[in-house]
Image: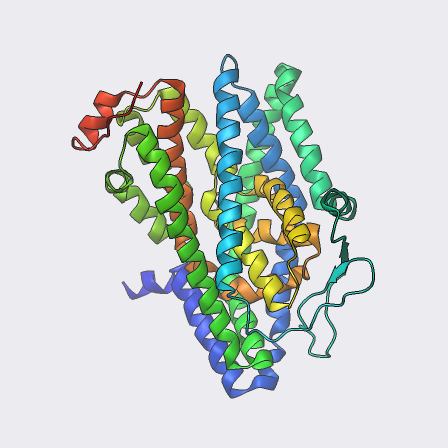
Length: 427
């Protein structure tokens, strides 16, 4: 029992955070020297960003387009996924702007020259200057801001190339099929590499917490606690307002759906792996009356393109880091941020650590704050259970909503499986 507890990744990170906190309070000077532990971890993650995102997007888009005879369904799935992704991104952004969890963390002020807004990063070096690169975002030209983001970001250029390659792959015949098979093998190996890198997360969390408390003082812990609370509040708000409404439109109460898949949700909460619940969810959703082809398509592509919880986290984290760096988030900057996030989120997956990788890629694209500032969030990364749970629940609701949209939802089965709680819907 004790050995199993010691192997728990969440417990390891929590212990590492407490050790880092203690070192920061006891020996601030020594604690600040622990920064390379978190910076090195982020740097290794950053090296994998272009490869992982390219392969995942090509594989996902090719799989979505490669369903012969299902062009209408694939189009509806893609439209639904993008609409929900945008809603999740906006929800996370609005909640973070309202609650302002990043205020109170000491950071260098932004520099504002004539003719534009230059955003700078956190004063992580302790020398009064902001680290990272500056990025000129015109105040009154959103298209120009997007063009600048693409021009300065290799990640966005790689993602665009991946989208085009994924669209072209199904049209290559047998050669395209072989390439898709190779991509699936590459994805599997990349996931193994990512899981190996994540074994060092406790060490990185220790370094991040020790440096943060040692450099900024004990008051730096409060914004991190506020950040975690903000993520959970945004997730609950999205589930109650958006997912509950979509479930009701499909003829089901969300509370009954949650009870129906509770075993899978508990599995996700304790393991942190959304994919672990996939077999059970597919079986239950088909038994619930969802069309078989809808379930198979949604549950396979949804683990890349319909990660509502990860999208909530992405914009909340971006706003948090910008607030910590005293970056003024103008309407023009926000209008540039959302489309870029919508594109970089295509590279997300349900694998642990993927959201952190996507956040690093987005920071690299926007130059909002230095990518190294992701290290501030390492200590609380394992506490984001709401992110995985929202991802899973969002895909369950997507199966119901899209089956209803296709006119392929068995309402008798839905009523039977949910204990008579299915709602009457017109048509």
